[in-house]
Image 1 (cartoon, rainbow over the protein chains, first blue to last red):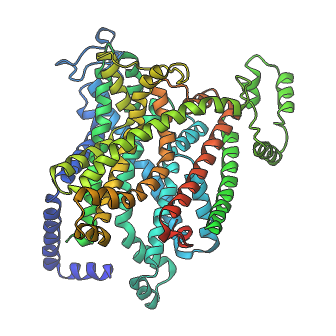
Image 2 (cartoon, one colour):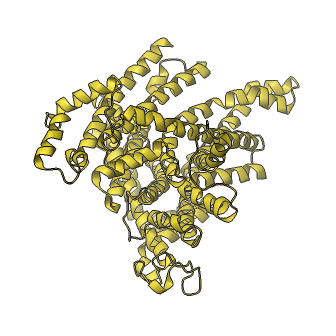
Image 3 (cartoon, each protein chain N blue to C red):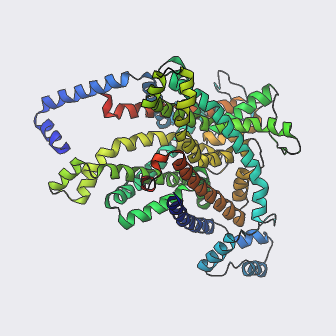
Length: 298
Length: 320
């Protein structure tokens, strides 16, 4: 059915474009009714830009130490102050965005790439494969998320890539469960029966009919789990199990800040505020997205 | 009912078996030679071989696994490489501290979540509701370890009201214990409070629109009586479930919280054993954590079906 829509649009370009603008306008009107969600989405986009443009935006080299500028309070030269090695905190926070985004987005991407197909197949075919997958996710989910991530990082070794991998693997069972549940809910629906009646094979039914139907729920889950993954990376780095110094991860920065709470409290403010504002914005945007994608809301 | 409990326990047994396999292989995959760690750096080849013999590290991996599981089932998880204390003993020394922290943080969370959640459900779409929702969103988003650092900065460094770290046993010094546990319990309870508040609000809203509530109102009961006598009782059932499901997050949170406030509990033990490559300890601690979590989940499921007779049927297993 989606294929038909595009065919019509391309053969009748004028109608197609007009349709597109009205859809966009309608989408915008619905989004504009939720200022908090819009604000959240804007901040998330700003952080994405910050992460991508870190080399050009950051005023200073995040690794350059300066023995004459150790633990200086915020000033015109260093708007967020300097750390225990005389590095510019603002530049480190900006570069830290890159690390946090990388860990948050790629780990959840990994969880989706592994979890969604597994859940799709398990829910679609049921049977033995489903049973095996479910017992495995049961066992997997019996480890508290963070403890599983700590265990995996111990096996893999401490680095940004390994922390991302560990968080992704720890988040995978959630996506298997969610996808399976959604597939179970939709495989008996009329549109699936219809597709079958028209002769669609298993792969086509799964990929072209069920997957688009459950995609919005998965998208909402992703916006909820990315902030969780960002916090998890910060915690791993804070514990010394993730990104290693001198890399400017918000978690490692907070770890260093702990020793200087009396003499340089700003070292603790900014990385934490950065995490907080980013996760809060993700959650605001995610809440909005959930309402926005809810078809009952028209 | 009994059938249901047995079925849940059987599934849990399978899960536990898979867990033990994962933990065992996981620990074997940690880079580094356990014999080397046990013997210390100056040991020679003969010394290493002796240790390998003693701990059966030369045996086939399957034999090692079976021996470990066999001993574990009899309550023997081996002894720590570093302290030579048995794993069970170490854990039973550390666990009460974390249990106290967890209980206090659950109390904090409930004390915040239930009144605020009920209020925002009863006063839905008023300023109260918006403020409560904003707070719960902040509670969900704030990184707890940063919250902990900020509390230390404010209450210990700035105001000097509360000690930043350290631990004294409740038995020796109840007041000192509680003042030191206050900030950790609040930090650990924050996320939980946010989650529980949302759940309280949602289920109270659902309950408040139910027919029997309308009946209670129409027979002339005052608003307060309806809420306290009729609505809360049913409205809090899902909250119990969510509380149970949050135990895993609580255990994970305890790791970080104990690290910040230097509480010598179970969470710190996990990190320490990982850092010191104390394999038997890592193995035992993770196995205990996962098993406890599985058992809690069974208890939650069973208590849920006890609290809510409508789902006391086979459906509950399939729904999971």
